[in-house]
Length: 280
Picture 1 (cartoon, one colour):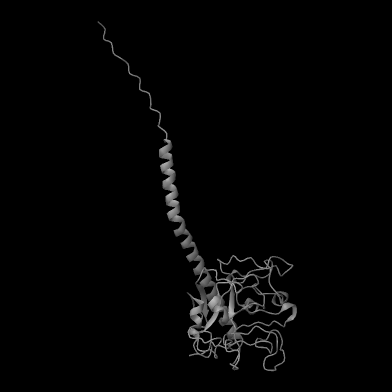
Picture 2 (cartoon, rainbow, N blue to C red):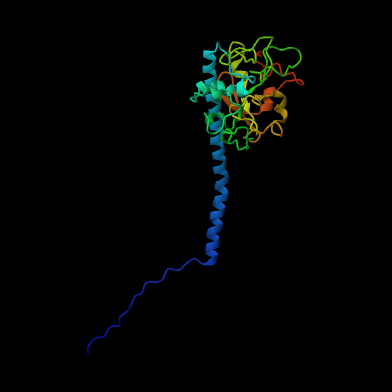
């Protein structure tokens, strides 16, 4: 008899899809991983921005040192009595930060995004909306301010022992000199020789508020009287929660607390603190 064999037909098995429960488990695991990773990524991003902000301050400090070399050791300041709104401390640095501002830009009340702008003057975490003060475009933010001061203690405003003054009147009865001569009768700024402890004397801090604009001579000075309430309105918040980046007159910058810079002060007397150029 002829042999017979049974033929077997093998059909590929259809892949089994995820069940609803399995799909929900996968989604839950992904959500958990995202919840774990996002804070770490956000913290890493903020740390990078904090570092960039420190680098900004160091570049401004380098430009300020170069300015001082060309102007008999004198640091930049504000000339609020100049034409068109005056020349701000950051305007003076335009020749040293690569902007090479035009005369109109130097004397404008603020710079817009269409003017000579450098991003080193704004902290990357500064997201405060600025007041529109220019008709030529959106105003460019400036996060940083120089410390407020005057050339000598007069027994009254003892808080004013910082680097530069922001004012309009002539100083010590002097007449106003030409706009291209820093240390004119309108303003004062310290010289590097005046500063007795460069590594311990505060030069610049942060103040992110709506009228702190690049090229604006008003509202450009950091006031030690605000140090203890700095994180609250109307004095402007620091972009880094409670801490602040601080630059010193020797060119270094560090992260700290503004209130630590006035340690040991009494009332409005800040002599002997980090704001005092005469402190050793």
